[in-house]
Length: 81
Image (cartoon, rainbow, N blue to C red):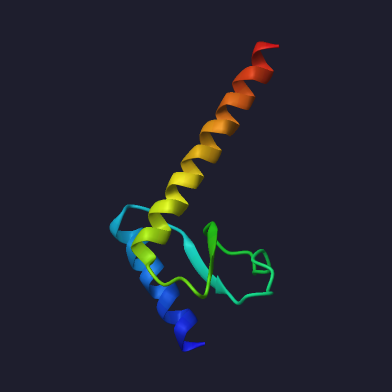
């Protein structure tokens, strides 16, 4: 559990330093990432086995931005129809 807390703390620190405001929750292999209690903030779930937080978070943000772009494109296409 100590490893999870340190990964969560490192991700929280990275998020704070980069202007993001999210809760962070690490999950174990085999555990469902979505099992969490409702909170005041959006929650990012991360695997407890993250080795390099900087690399992981850069990839996470890139994936998030691409997903957001796709969502915007889909909404715009639906409006155009």
